Image (tube, rainbow, N blue to C red):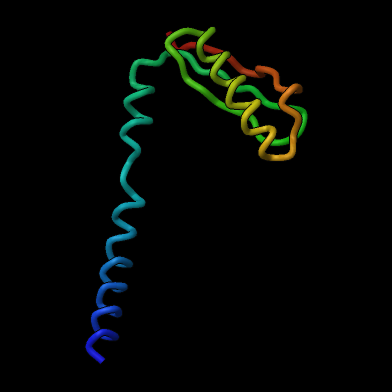
Length: 91
């Protein structure tokens, strides 16, 4: 009976801590985009595309194309059909 009580308490503790972990901001994502002025979005003819940030327009375009080709293949699209549909800089 003691092991059942211990297991139940351990499960309850894990479940209580879970919501606190999921709501934490992604520091590495925010830090990577802190100095990035440009963004670009590339999409395939079908499937999921990619959005990326970069210090220059060219970097953002290349990153978004790389993301598009990666995600298009995973989501039923053709990576070869990726093209940049939006590219702009803040400043």
